Image (cartoon, rainbow, N blue to C red; front, side):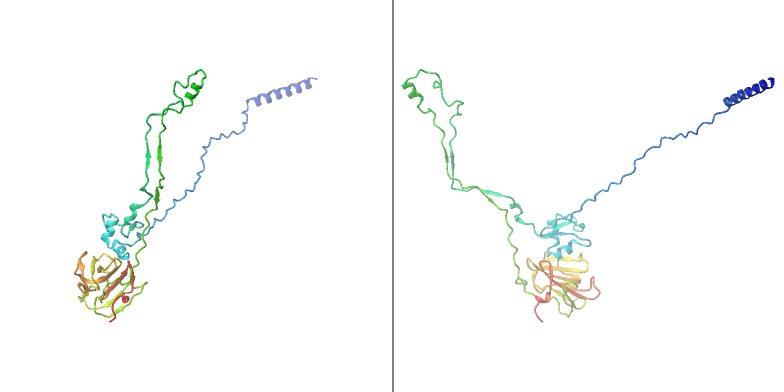
Length: 318
């Protein structure tokens, strides 16, 4: 029995020591991961931005949109106008300061622009006679004492049936013709200009035609000659341009012969006339040269309303 008690005591002590060791052992804690709050960033959303619609400049009759490489002198030549007129019509402070896509007026301002809109015209022969009211109308249709209660009698009834003492205002309405709206002033059709328009033409130099007219490649005639040879005005007119501001033409003279016809003389050695000068047919205006050209020659053009035409249609046969 004693051994059994000893065994029980040993088992009890073992259990107690086990429990005590369990209490003193560091407990295994479950791993805890601290998750820091991650800032949430909004995904960058790319919103497509519609590109602004670039509308081409409005082009009306008598206007021109400047292109790259244009000069005011070239534009004036191509439209049969004086560059000084273009400066005035477009209020340009610097003729050399024109920009691409700039809209320029290349025709004289229309005098009829000020007559736009609807106009009214009074029609004579009709009158309206209105007489002013002598006094303002009363608020009651009857005047005192007729509104009072009075005993009935034939005399009183006859008095009440009499017309009002005031006379109505007479307004005389004659028949009036309505005011007629006028349509906006319509532009008169452009004048049809004959090709020659009574210009008496002559050859500007005595020489051989090296290159004839070709609307795509050559805007006029290339005529041979000698350095310093006289260049004569092919017709009477007025010097519209004299200078070297148009690329490819060298020293250039332009003469305006009529409202629609002009002639051009290019590659001169020297210019003998000035802008605005009146010129007679056959007058010496320049000396032949090779400015802006590989050879000595005269490049001669005739333009109708700014468009190059074949000079052979105008010059006399020889």
